[in-house]
Image 1 (cartoon, rainbow over the protein chains, first blue to last red):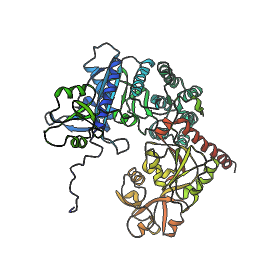
Image 2: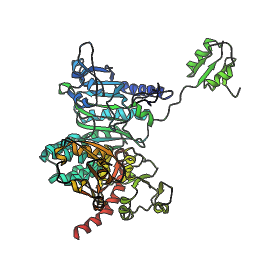
Image 3: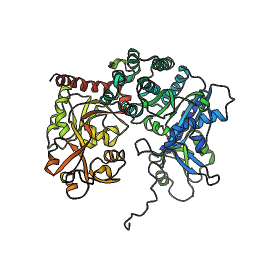
Image 4: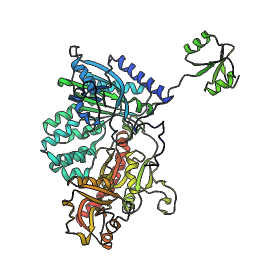
Length: 383
Length: 239
C-alpha cells in the first residue's frame, strides 16, 4: 500500500497500556497494601520469574492455561519458553519442587504482571496484574474460608464498597452430567447451554436431568436461598457430597466473616479450568469485571491447595482514589533540612534546579500548590 | 424459585435504575404485549417514531429502557451498559459473548437462519458439499463460517448489512445466509431456501456480572417476564 499512515511512536500492541501518574503509583500502593495484609496473615512472599520452560509452566495445574499463553524459543537451548498467563501454577511448582519439606499448611503470597494471548472477549488488556495467596495442604472448608476472609479484609482495607463473593462448585455440574450418562457432543452442547444459563436449551438437551438442572440454574443468587434450593433437589450421593462441601464452605466463611455478602451459583463452572473444588469469584457493586478469582485445585504431586488471586489493576478502578502527596516547591537555595523535614511530614518536594527564574511561576508550572518561603511551606497563590 | 426480600440483603444495592435494552423494529413489535404484561410501560416518547431520545424512563422507577439496533442489544448487554435485554438468538449465535446469560426463551420473533441460492442453480454441480470453498453473502459472518467449517468448507464471506438477496443475482456470491421468516423476499428475488441452520426465537438476556452483583433485582425482573410468559404458553398448549 502506498497510503499507509506514518507509524505513530505512541502506538502499543493492542491490549498493552502505559500507566501514567497518578494511576501507576496508585496501583503500586494498592499492591503494597494487599501484600501487607497477606504478610500479616502469615503468607510468605515468593517471586517466580516471568518466563519458564513450557514443560514446567504448562504441566499439572498449568495445562488449563496453555491456550492463553505466549510462547517463545530460548535461542540458547532451543527449548520453548512460556510467558506466564497466571501465577498460580508457578506457586504450585514452587511448593512441590523447592519447598516440599516445609511443613504444611504452606502459606505463600505473590504479586506480579502476567501476559495473556487475548482477554476473554478478544479485546481488552493482555497484560494484567495479579496479587494473591495460596494455601497448600489441608483440604478443609476452614481453609477455603481463610482465603476468602483474607481477600475480604484486603478489599475492606482498600475501601472497595459493595463487595460480594460468588461461590461455585464446578465439579458438581460435571458429576451430575456423569450420573446422567452424558458424553460426547450432547454433553458439550448441554455444558454450553448451562454455561449460558440458556434454560430453553437445557430443557431441550437435558433429558431426565433437565428439571433438576433448570431448578439449579434458577437457584443462583444469595447464598442462603441457593443452598436451600440445592438441599431440596434430589441428587445422587456423589453429587450430594459435593453440594454438602459447598454448604460447609459457605458456613465456614459466614462463621469467620459475619455479614459477608455471598452468592452461590450451583451450576456455574467457568474460570481457570484447573479448579477441582469450591471456586470463588470476587465482585463489587457497579464494577463490570471480576476483582479476583480463586478456588481449590490439586497442586503438583496432587497435593490439595486453594488460593485466591486478586487483580490490582481492576480493584484500582473500584477503590476510591487515595490522597496523593502534596507537592511543595523548593526555590533555589532552600536549606536541605527544610526539604527533609517536609518529606518526613508526608509532602513531596520538588526542587529548583537553577538559581534564576520566577520561583512562583515555576511552582505553578510544576503543579505544586505549596512553595517554601522563609523556611515555611505556604500556598503558592495565596501568599 | 427463591427470591429473597431486600431486608435479607446486607449491602444496599446500587440505586441507579436497571437498563433494559430493546431492539428496534420487528422484535420490538412482538415484544410489546409481553412488556405490557410484565408491567413495564415506557414513557410516552418511546412509541413516538419521531422522537430523538434513545433512553426512556418507565412506570417503574427501577427500570429504564434504551432502544438500539437489534445487533447492538447483545453488545450493550455484554459490556454491561445495559444489564438486561431482549435479543434474537441469531444475534447471540453470531457474537457468542461469554458475558451474556440467556435465561428465558420469550417465544417471540420466531424465524430461522437459512442458506438460500438462486432457484435455477439448485441441483447443479455447485452443490456446496462438493466444494472446498464457497462465497457467501451474509450479515452473519461468524455463524456462516462456523456452519461451513463444520462441513469442511471454507466460506469466504461477503459481509453485507442488507439486500442480501441481490448478491447471488449480481454474482457477488454463490449463496446467502440470512434470516428467513415467510420466505417471500427470497421467492420474489428468485432464490430458494436449501438448508436451515437454526430456528430462532427472541431471548431475554442478562449481563453475567450484573446477575452476580445484583441477583435480587435482576432475578425479580426475570421473574416478571417469566410470569408474563406463563399464561401465553399455557394458552398455546391448550390450543
